[in-house]
Amino acid sequence: MSSDNVFMENMNEVKFLKKDIKAELTEKKSRFIAYVTPVKNEDEALDFIAAIKKKHYDARHNCYAYSVGGMIKSSDDGEPAHTAGRPMAEIISKEGLDNVCAVVTRYFGGILLGTGGLVRAYQGALALALSEAEYYTLSPMFGFHILCDYNDHGRLTRHAENNGFIIENQSWSDKVEFDLYVPADRKEEARKAVISLSTGKAGITELGSCLK
Image 1 (cartoon, helix red, strand yellow):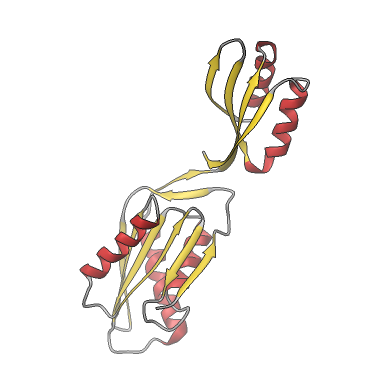
Image 2 (image 1 turned 180 degrees about the vertical axis):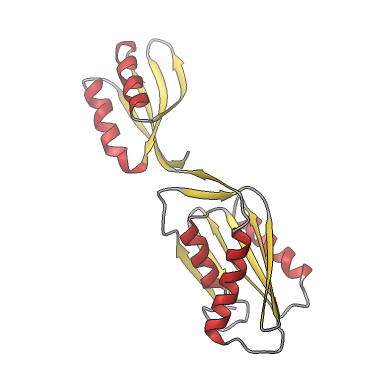
């Protein structure tokens, strides 16, 4: 069994599947049945793959690709190398999907498809399923925990609102604390703005990358 790892191509916006989908196509008498499901982690993906293999124990191949945290793994499950799992992984990457698992089951129809035909069939079955999918999207963000004076709080929150930044978990005591989430590619710009608007008095702690 071959296995390939690739990374997401487009991390500007990540799409997530809302619910399970299924599609089927026939190519030269071979049946290609695509199953796609949202997953939270790699264990869920592997459990899904195992369940489909059990369901279609009599099939010639159960090829798969899944993405968790931007890392995509795939398997040709006995098909010629790079004719099934990797082409499916390429579809997932180009669609910007994450936390998703796809399995395409093939029942051999007696006619050889050739490498090009296999690639088209596996990608076609997955693309057909995804054409009916419902998604929600999230964007890569970077979080900071901010500790500031009351006088600076207004300036910082106005700047955040004007730039579409996200403020969460505000609390007030002798100072004001809150979490600030900004687009990942504006991380340094946001840090400099906090320093400037608070004249260097605000405390800034990095919370790290996330999706919002």
